[in-house]
Image 1: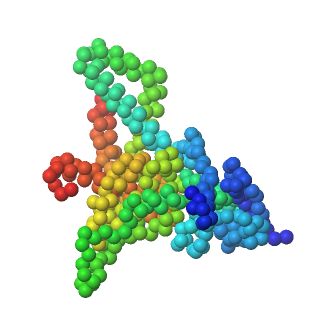
Image 2 (image 1 turned 45 degrees about the vertical axis):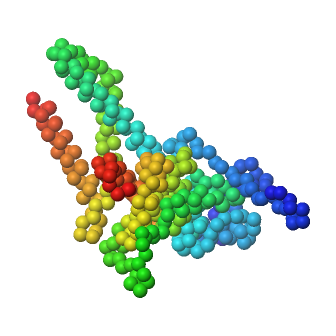
Image 3 (image 1 turned 180 degrees about the vertical axis):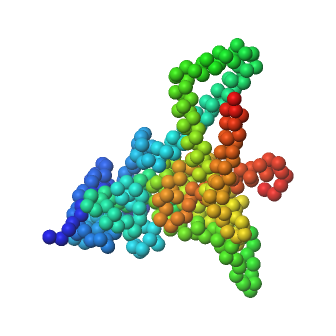
Length: 141
Length: 247
């Protein structure tokens, strides 16, 4: 601030704030944060299943020998382990996603907000029915 | 001898300290005391220089938010009995700069709040002689939850997105924008749209959901943000399909 000569001049007060840095490991500090990060990461495994399905279709299009090779590759213990982990994450993703759906959708009927269970419930039911139909097709022999 | 409980309190003097340090105080343990009572006891009896914000001590003013054992809490509603006999650690709200001891700088939040225009906007006011703007209980019910916000900023302290990206508008500001957007008397949704739908608005939110968990007034800011994401997406599709439509 410039001194005007006659009037007193003041130094503007600049508070010296302390700013804390967010730790790189912030997602380990709370169970809920960890759950969130796992939920976000589960999308990688979802994408992996899409790629596997595309590879499977490609093998199918190239004939019985290519498909048998693909099936042999699936029997590799490392691939089985990776698929088991991916399956866990895809199920985790589905459950957390359906549980969050009622928060994003505020459906109102007759002036009242529809209970959460009526939003997430049909999702879970549809998921189970579709899974059961697919399982029936695959396992009927 | 009367029972006591230890409090570990973050102290920071901008003139003397480079970083906050913890100082331990011992206060009488009483079942009906909240953390704020203990802080007031310390200021009265042990150290008058202890600095913190408080006012109503009944969960309305929203000034006494602090981190209690690492969780964002209103200290007027957090009982010592829930922690005793272990010491209670009291720190300033996370994700904000610390001014002194337990006082944080809230300028950033105030700025973001004003950007959202949290007031009723009318295209044209009707004359006073026509009376007030009426609202049915059903119309009130649509936004009432969001109007419970007391600006205590606990949701900002719980939000890792705000911690990592301080440009994010944040949970309370967005919930309060929705409070007015959903009000039947308001006509300002278009004015708030640009601020809300930019990246630093709703789209920075990754739906961690902790803002809703820590909210002492059950506002559900996480829900407000996700619901506005749907609204913004619908608006975007409308503007793509009907580019000649009302801007």
